[in-house]
Length: 368
Image (cartoon, rainbow, N blue to C red; front, side, top):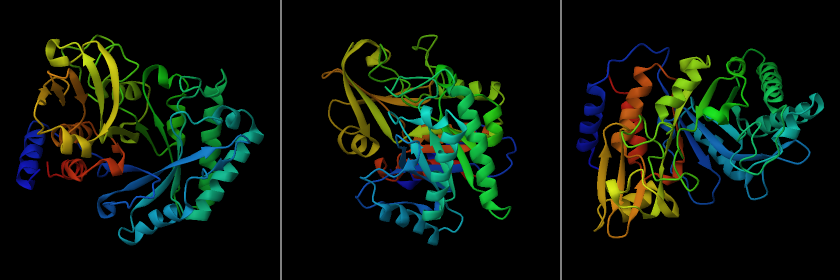
């Protein structure tokens, strides 16, 4: 997208907003998955990079999986040479990653978890740890879980916070963060108690619709679509959930996807939006959306003024793609600033061609 068009989109998104004061500039946090492919990282314009993922071993210790090359983590830490303020955080877990319940269950197990995390912190000169347990008390991903997960997770985070503070010795603040989602996914979180131990919470405000939902729909809508059912999940509702639970606004980061969700054999009414579907096409990166869909014959771009996100529809093939684009991300960044939220987190760096990151950065740093 030419820069003049991007600036026009940002101006339109920001012109309708009245910003309130924020304690500091909004954070911009990017997840980076380990991969041997070269990484194009806009290090000078990032605040935090989360390296994904370390795992919890069966004995409760935090380890790098065999497929992760430690040299790539060292190289990521080396990006501080381009931006001395850049903070590198090790993210632990992810969807389907287990052994958290056992690691949090007892004081001895928590100590093993914390000791191993601190050892990795020292080994790679990291700036903090991000706990991505999906989700305490739930077995949706086929991982172990227990009724005591909720209280045990609190004890784990509080003990880890205390240890990180001792490690910093007053001279360095090590970050402690988590990834979380709202509603039933947050039942295993003692909010706001754990917020006191955390620097911030990265909300996974995406994947609202996908293979497990009965209809198509926006997988990362900001507001509620007029076509959506009463129980439809939205970014605004997720933020409100954590605010109502007592989490400070500046500790909430809105999550955005650099990928879309695909649906096939979709009921064609309403251009496929919030309609039944028969096949799940999986994920599609923003890079591939631009390269193979946006201007391709047969594909129509639509905009939902209520949800403030686009979708793509192919009536001949009855396929739908839900995704974020530069316009919708500029609007989300404006929402973050207007409501005094902490910032924006995105998944994941390699899925972008540069347009999405540029839209986020420019909107978060625009002059009101």
